[in-house]
Image 1 (cartoon, rainbow, N blue to C red):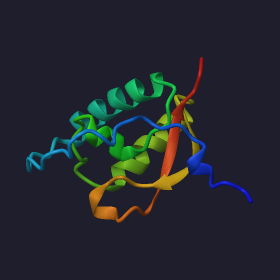
Image 2 (cartoon, rainbow, N blue to C red; image 1 turned 135 degrees about the horizontal axis):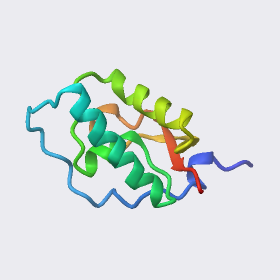
Image 3 (cartoon, one colour; image 1 turned 90 degrees about the vertical axis):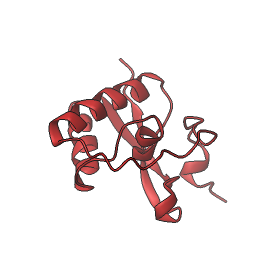
Length: 108
């Protein structure tokens, strides 16, 4: 029997972190983009797999538009900073563990 791919991918140990507080502050698109790129670079450098919500758990605010998550990860994948390595249940409380893409930094 094949094991699900998400069970073999080591991910960042962020499940012990408290859930981020909703502040209501929404950064502008450029400010959010810069913060999110810096956050992905940090996560990519760990060599561990991660998901978009791991950025939120590390203090990156939610983007002004939810579609920016996809644009962010697609742009950084095109730059070969990150690569998709599978799917796993999202730790985001509002998703009820729906599938979310898992990423890892490209080893240079």
